Length: 274
Image (tube, rainbow, N blue to C red; front, side, top):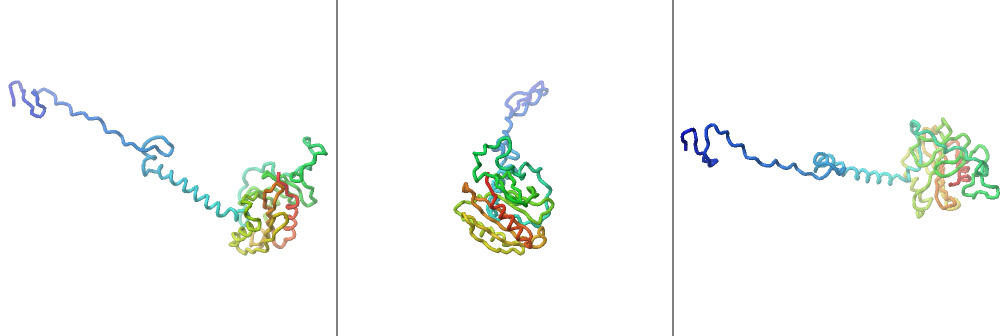
């Protein structure tokens, strides 16, 4: 209904309105609340990487999966990983050698030497070895005799400590602690290792024989470029005075098997855990 002065009744707003009156403002509503997501993998923030199905969610599942797979792989090759089989180009040297691998001082000398009456126990004494061997003290927790002039090698793939003649990869010595349960006999461990190594080109198990004091010894050969054809290796698992088990290995060209045997014998007779 319209009246004089331009006034009219607005049935929608249920009020009188005039021609010069501004239109009513649009109705006001509260803004919608932002979507809420669970916190991301780092415990902070919302949405984005931490949202359901986002990249952050995917990472939180992949990490434990990769760790589990790694554990399976490591466990499966723990025994076979003892041995170094060569046939590769040497890698660039790692960190500079530490004080390990240096000749051990004669027992009972130096400013801190104990009185003569207090002789060291056989398990820690530095044995006297004839040429061509020298006793070295290794940072792996032992001392052992190696051929004079041999040095600790830092670019190996296997376990423990390695010694070689500088510039010559045809022969080596390897020493490491056996961590498998004592319920598994030494010869049983070596049989398992021999089976794992059986896939190497030209691999041949020569013998596995028990040795005194709960020890055991594996002799084997395989094709090897570093040793210029065939390499012979002798592995001895030996029991230390404290009951711990260690693996001592000597390897070199099969044609020089006498030297390989002599190197292992010197290591077995001189080995002392510290």
